[in-house]
Picture 1 (tube, rainbow, N blue to C red):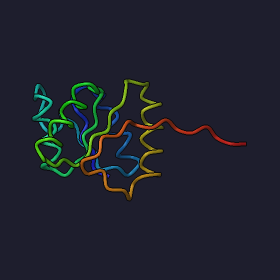
Picture 2 (cartoon, rainbow, N blue to C red):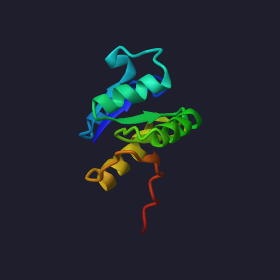
Picture 3 (cartoon, rainbow, N blue to C red):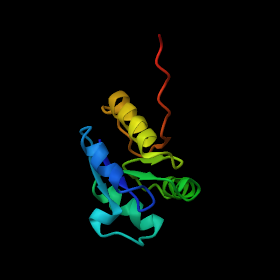
Length: 118
């Protein structure tokens, strides 16, 4: 799972996700600070990376526009801001559950971790 975190997502999350085996880079790592949303998605697409953002409303509209224009992307994961620990838990769960799935042209909300059954 190759991820690209836009500039709204805390950069420290990259290291946490890399420790879980995810190939992850950030807008800061790539020198893409102050890019437009369209440019972030184009960069992620060129690198075959799934876009990760807190900017849900704008990226929902962008995904719709790309679909209408028949433009492909590697996938978009939307999430609301959570604590680093919660984001880490959710991404670890996503990775373990969906790591072999193709996210191309999909818009996905980062799912919560299901409660542990006793």
